[in-house]
Length: 549
Image (tube, rainbow, N blue to C red; front, side):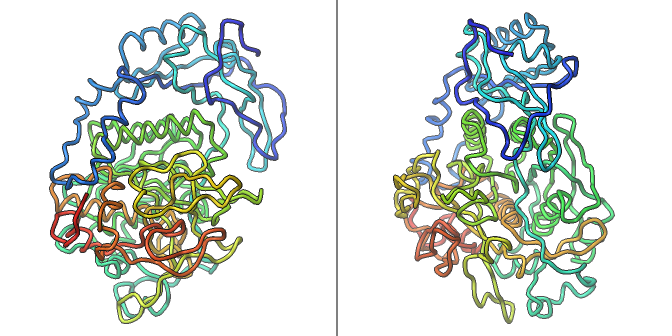
């Protein structure tokens, strides 16, 4: 349905048909759907970023940081009650039902028929067929009445195409042998795959901490876990099984598919890696549909979860920046700013398709959400070890088909101030944009030197940058426990002063991910490098000999 003359487009909401998809007709007009509207903060959209004082955070030690409480944040930057009332009146006038209102998340969830939504938002919805099935989609912009145009920041859910993919790679072998001897470090190192606890020793994770008192959130867009697999896995490692809760977002839930190479693999590796390394932490898994609405609603649910209050969020799903609408890039990034203000660190996989990020147009691309400056982007390496120590570590790049770490220069986000000291190169694309450099950090991600995971009653070796995000999330949970205070928005600290040269990172200087080459210092393949966990903890407590700021 075309927009009314009184309607105006929501900036950045334009959609195109998914590549390879074809229209199959219109959805049933009486079908009921849900849509989430995100509205402006009461103090203006730039106020949150200004409040973060990102450039100054690099000079403030974690224990001295003052993060906002959820109550303070809502009071200062939540939605204005008048704006919410205006949206509710708009919904009522168009035959839509308001099912949820959240001043903290700045969201209003609407329910109604396809016909009512098409009329209210000036869109023509169609059913499209593509290689993975069908989706309800739209072409062009979403429109809203002029009287609410300044209030609405984004409209999510009219189009339910799959938005992201998990960033893991499976070692192409039959089911891995039994793990009764997985605690035998020397044997497993020689077999070229690792348990998470072995990698923690190689990366010298802090000792004497187990994540007690911390809550780690995990975002999942499909699949599920089986408690019996978790019980068996942690028993084989000799690690206490962690406490795990689930939160259903937009109707999704824990739903194992029985396919280890599908989303179950993502769910299990996230829980098992982070759980093995911080077993005393509380883990909360937020299950959501794989749409731009579901993904964003899950992130917002974790950030503003006043019951569980996670201090770390692990995300191993994403897609090329070019596959997102501008309204999504902006609204997600605002959510990540909210997390920073609340003292929450977000770790995100940087992708598994090298510098192209899986797009075959001849240009370099980076993966989002990892490309947000408020995300700790996690790249990948190939790691070899002998005698329980790292013998070699290079950029993970096994070629186009087998996978390579994502990384490069954002075409959407500008160069953040915290990266000024590391000489981020210009993009290799025409025009040589000076943008946000991805990733920030790295970890072992090559499936040939991958992580032993139990999923759907099988033992499988996984790689991909998906395994790096929970690795870093667990490390941050351990650091938070030791500090007694969340480190929060970590990027400005990691890049500040001499920290990159303090010994807190294993600098990776060999290899490439296609268009970009590893080098001394930061690079667009492995960022600052892989962790020396104990040294990083020392630096963050001011005992590591590095001057911050």
